[in-house]
Image (cartoon, rainbow, N blue to C red):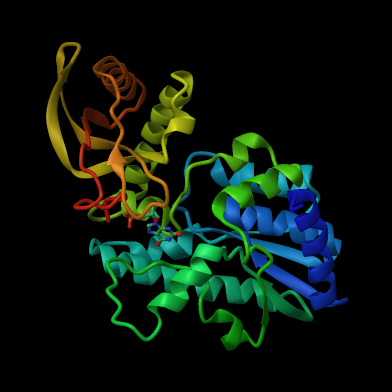
Amino acid sequence: DWTMDAYREQAIAAIREQVGDKKVICALSGGVDSSVAAALLHEAIGDQLTCVFVDHGLLRLNEAEEVVAMFRDNMNLSVIHAQEQELFLGELDGVSDPETKRKIIGRLFIDVFQKYANQIAGAEFLAQGTLYPDVIESVSFSGGPSVTIKSHHNVGGLPEKMGLKLVEPLRELFKDEVRELGRELGLPASFIGRHPFPGPGLAIRCPGEITRDKLEILRKADAVYIDQIRRHGLYDDIWQAFVAILPVRTVGVMGDGRTYDFACALRAVTSVDGMTADYYPFSHDFLGETATRIINEVPGINRVTYDITSKPPGTIEWE
Ligand code: XMP
């Protein structure tokens, strides 16, 4: 009789067997997979685990503080908060091509991770939250013709380069099982049910050049939008929802004055695996109320649009 409790015990035994008394490092993104992997490893090997949370300046409002506080203060993990906002935003300055943005972020992420990992004396293992579907996908794609629509950024290739061995304690699990394991390990339900967030973060929700001003506006608008979705009890019905700030200013009128501010697009989709997606059929009341709130509460935005493109032909993210 297979239960998650039994799996957990077995996985912990397997980690202890593989790692022995050596040290393990883990790139913690705050996403469900890396969070559950870190919590499981912590339970298995305690302070032999060090997590590195890379803050690239492209995270959502309060995200870095919340993730670091939860793992460090509530769960007692050793977490290095790599404050590398200046580095990432500096290198992205003036860049507007989507693939170039992704490549820069992917390269810097590896550099930064490596820099912090090198400070952890004697680390021999790198932990990753690879899931079963990731394993299958990489097998079925290898050798065959591969079509890359967007380059995904992860720490692929890094273990060999750094001479680290891989620990992948979630390799046999599907996403729903990872969530169940996370609950078993005591991660808060709000954390486990979080929408996916891409590695390149807000960079790919800010088409055109990324500026600090635009990122600040985007963070505020996104927080209002997600608050609206939660207040209306819709969060768990949606696979992913976010705001993209558009690289265009539009004319508006507010009070007695003319405004000339950014337009934004709201995105919300349902999906089972992110491969295909349908736009979410919000009511017009919800959309109208959300637009009003964003324009009233977020200086810098004076126009709100709703993206009704499904995938395909659109992708979920804007870049
Ligand atoms: P697209 O935009 O390709 O996104 O329809 C499908 C799903 O993948 C996420 N995504 C990423 N996740 N690194 C990630 O970890 C990435 O570079 C990346 N790009 C897209 C996206 O948020 C959606 O859930």
